[in-house]
Image (cartoon, rainbow, N blue to C red; front, top):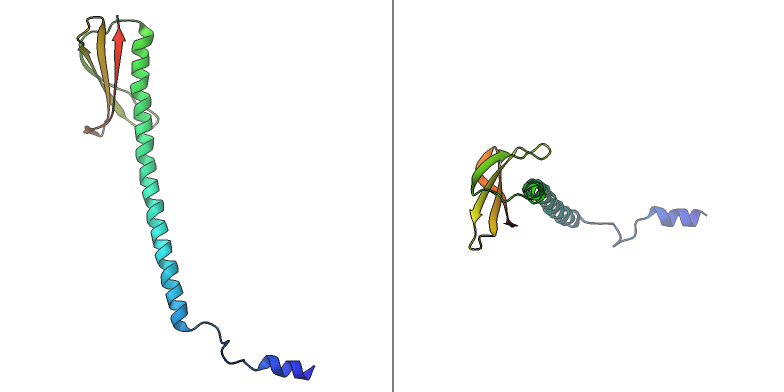
Length: 131
């Protein structure tokens, strides 16, 4: 029993553990990987906000186009703007009805813009309506 105690208490040459340089290199590698993953998570968060806005704008434009279809009315040529909020987003819809080469059809374009930044169009949907 005393023999095994003596052997355990003596360090064996060559198995002293990691050197300081090895530990520092490992820390640099882990730090670089964590930094890259944080950048990727930040990018995903900003992309999800844009996708949410685009999805809400699509719903607003589709709602207007469905209203036109369900009314079974031939829309008058012209342009108009109206609010079309979705959730907490304040959106503006711009509807333009244009004549088409076929007198039985009208081209309806619905553009959705952000009320806070009206120069930035989020989405534009187009539909042909029959008489």
